[in-house]
Length: 68
Image (tube, rainbow, N blue to C red; front, top):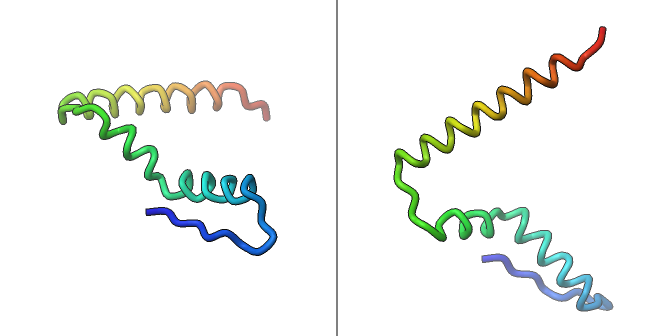
C-alpha cells in the first residue's frame, strides 16, 4: 500500500502529485488492470508472442534507419 505524509508548507496539489508519482512507480495500478479480467495461460502466451513479434519488427525497422 502506498502512503504519502503531508510535509510542512506543502499544498494539496503537491501532495497529490507526489502520491500519483509513487503509485505509478510502485506498479500497483498496472497489476490491478491486468487482474480485472481472467486471461487463460494460452491467451497470455499468445499475447506475449504477439508483443515479442511487434518488438522485433520495431527493432528491425530502427536498424534499417541508421546511416553510417
